[in-house]
Each structure stands twice: as C-alpha cells, then as structure tokens.
Length: 434
Figure 1 (tube, one colour):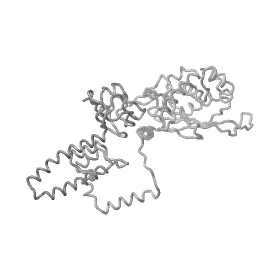
Figure 2 (spheres, helix red, strand yellow):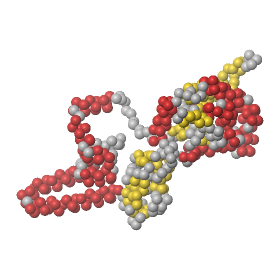
Figure 3 (cartoon, one colour):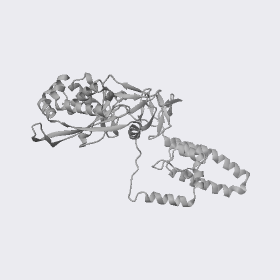
Figure 4 (cartoon, one colour):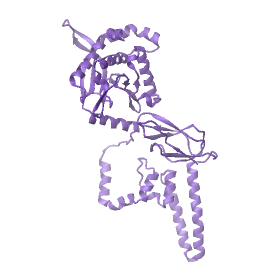
C-alpha cells in the first residue's frame, strides 16, 4: 500500500484547501496522473499521484485544509479497479454485524431465559442502525465511530451542511462535546437559540470564505497594521495620450498584434519615476532598506475568486508593445486560473486600475512588502482652466499614490506622483525616452 502525501509546493506555501478530487475510490491511476486540485493562497495547483495503482482510500474531503506532508490518499499498487466508499461502509457494517451475531447466539444457548431480552436488543439495534444510516456523515466518520463505539446521533457536526466528519467523532470520543452539553445550563441553551433567531430578522446565507479570499483579507489588514500607509492624490489631463492612441492604435495593432492601451503609458511613466525616486522601489527588511535595481511591476487583476497581482518582469527593458503583451498575458492567465507561482512573486511596485469598474477616486492598499502602489481611476470630462485663462472641458483622471511613510517622505511621494503626471501629459517625450 502506497501513501499519497501533499508535496512540497513552494517555499512560501505550506498549506492549502482541497478544491476538487479528480479521482474517486476504486479508480485506477498511473504515476504522475493528477488526482486533486489544491487551492492555495496564491494559485490552484494539481497534485499528482506519485505511484500507479488503485485508489483504496481518500483520507480527506473537498473543503478540507491540508498541510505539506499530510497523507491524503492511499494507493494499492497491485489492486484492481472498482468499489466505492458506500460499498466499503456497508461491507464493514455487515462484517461487524456478523461478528456480533455469534455472540448473541452464544448468550441465547447459555441463557434461554434471556431470549426475549436478546430479541428486544436486536430490534433496538436494527432501529439504531437505520437511524445511523439516516445521519449525514462521511464514510471515514462512520468507520471511526464504529471503532470507538460512538453513536452518531450523539455527535454534533461543525460542518455548515451538518455533515459529521472524523474530527467530530474524535471530539465526541474525548468527551468535549458531552461535557459542553452537561455544563451548559438549559437557560443558556434557550438563550443561544433565541440569539440565533434574533441575530438576523431576515433570511441570510453563510458562505465559507475561500482560502484565497481569507489570505487577501489577512494581508490587507496586515498591510495597514504593519506599515505607516498614507495616500497622496493628483489629477492628469489625458488629452494628449488619448489623441496619440487615436492616431496610432490601428497601425500599432497591425504591427504588434496587440491593442495600445493606457496601462503601457502609465507603466513607462512609473518606471521613469521610480528611477528618479528609488525609495519607492524598495522594501524594509528588519533595520535595512533594500533598494531594488530592477523594475518588476505588479498588475492588479480582478478574478471571480478575488484580486491577484501577477508581475510583468523587467518592464524597464520592454517596449510599449512588450508591456501590452505582458499585461494581456498575465491577465488572461489569471482569469483562466493558469497562473504559476513564479507569475506572482517578486514584484517591486504595483499598479491597480479601478477606473475600469467606474471608480472615480480611491486609496489603494499597499501590496506588502512593497512600499508604493499607484491607483488609476476613470476618465471624465471636467472643466479645466488653461494657461491662457480659458476654460475647457478636458478628459481628466484622478491618480492616487499610497506609500509607506516609514521610508518615503511626503515630499518624495508628491514629487513622484507629479512626475508621473508630467510624463502622461507629455507622452511624446515619454515615447522618445523609451
């Protein structure tokens, strides 16, 4: 019998949640075949069988949290395909019944006057067995309950769907659940039921947070707690960029097979500004400031499962077309759940574009350990006083820079954002500088 364990995933990933089993008990697998999809805090990865044979047991269920090294399944390298969890449960149950029957017969032979009592017990056992089958429990939980001699009807399930799992059985065996029931006064029980009813006056639905959503929530809170985050704002006149895109978009797409978007302009401007204000391309490690001499720009991408920030590498060495292709590539991979761990690691600065959803203004949260993030917003025509004192309706965008005040002073942050504004408002100069 061969055990299948959660393999080493990456240096920064030690646990995950089973998103989906790709096999079931009794299936024949070859070495290297994918057997389950594991959801981590960064990407979903497939776990492969490290031995060929027949799946004899699935030790974890979909939704269970597992760590690297945990045994999740067993494979019989000499087994034959077939069978199911339900069959195994029934077989084990019938075997136990067969073991118990001789004992009852022995008692009947030795004590004939107890025959009626034995019949009553058998009837009670049959009724009890039926109740056990009606209870929602995993096959592993049923097996564990039989081993420990625990009645499933006495076990409280922690699963939102009411399904009893092996850990619930173990908790009941240790007396935890029984003690709680004994120690809790009846009045408190009534009060708890009352609270459950009055907590929400109208129907609600409770949805378990995915591992990725939990990680996003945790890291956003950590970023605010562990950094001295501050945000500064400016506005950009997008007239020249929009005119340039209008002039060049067709020839650009014909030549490079990719559209000329706004993100390549802002990426180029960010790289240029980072070179002038290097502390915004740094991070804090202990008592040291680590200034990065590379420009790997994170691009925040919204997916159905939450926000991810894949990285466009060496943005300073890429042309406008190279940046647009890089952004398109990571965005498609993110939405198709094809991102690899290396796509998400090592960014030095992040750009997030809430404008695509219609956001007018926001304060983006730092993508730790980075110390700077640029927020872009929607473009709207607003009245602007021109140098000749005329008032014109111009396409304007608010931009926001959140930064870590521990190493970036307000003066640098304001100048950094103003430099981006200057380059965007004079895109021809930006093009010439490459």
